Image 1: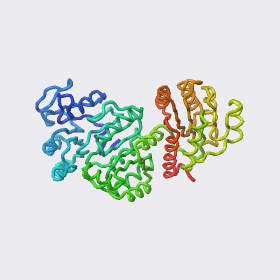
Image 2: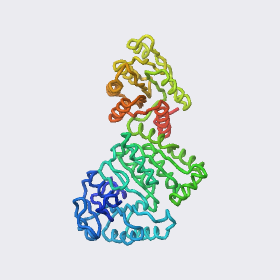
Image 3: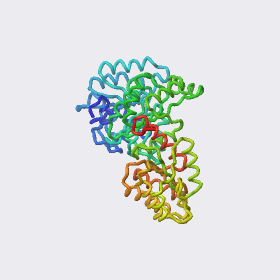
Image 4: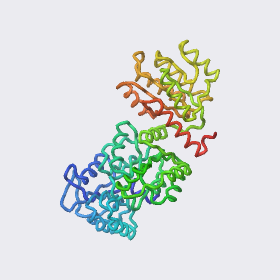
Length: 458
């Protein structure tokens, strides 16, 4: 993709300015992640006091590197950054990711302006400063100090908070949630959310964009980019600083103003952005959008082996206005032929606690294939009567054999075996949740986005 930010995500050569041979140092962690991540491009550690780090030749300065360098990752004390950026300009570096802190976030606006003056003079784009780095899974680029292993996937995550962003990436990876990109934006002195949205809107490796933000510097620019991106793929925002005290915390955290929450809310709705209040909610939504096709209709059927679980899911659907129409007669007849006589053929369809792999397979397949059904939520309680992993395999087989483009969300509740079953299903692109309200919320968010794009009409 020919874009000004392509060198940030797909560089042919990366220089780590401030690379360290001391484990635990930021410059060591960045270099180690880049090497261990399997980045195939050229890596140039820069440090005037070392000759070799992690088996790589070290250069005293970026000007000593003979080859071209696309991306410079700068991790040195803030006061030295403008001079080093000058060297990057002389070298022809296209993008600089400035890890260093000590700029506008602590009131040092003048130093940040010096940085921008050098960047403008040489045409260098700056990510940061005051950030932890960038990850782009398709190019195996892991140029950050906050996250080690990243599970590849279709979610692009932009974060204004370094520590929270890194922690969420760790958490999501443990939950088998995959990322196409993770971008720490820090102070957003130059490259901002809007430009990243412009790039990610066209990125074939990204299906959904998730943003943690505390402020927006240029509201009109953001709205334009967000709307253009949201017409192509979902954009989910966690906007912090909703309360008066939260806004104060934003000011002390990044040195920026949180702004009026009501204005943000209205702007997000106008440009098709989905606003999540909690990170659990945000990742719940992103997960189904990354794994499943968008809803093109509203009619939803719930399948469960636990009556109580079905009732909770029904309440959640009712609260959010998701229709649960009666099961059509021809589908009722097909299900009646395979289900026990005491099973409920209403919606939710209750297979009862005796449901085994065979019952789940035939029921899920029949429901998915029926033309009256637009979306399916399959619920599964762990019981002693059927091995939960085998049932999950049957659900996956039914999903594959039905071969339809409909959202299919799963809820699995139980112990350690249930967790194993959930990970198995998610490895095969079926989103799994551990409470019945969560897939309902995720489906509702997906429906909102489908309405905005015109894929789903009322």
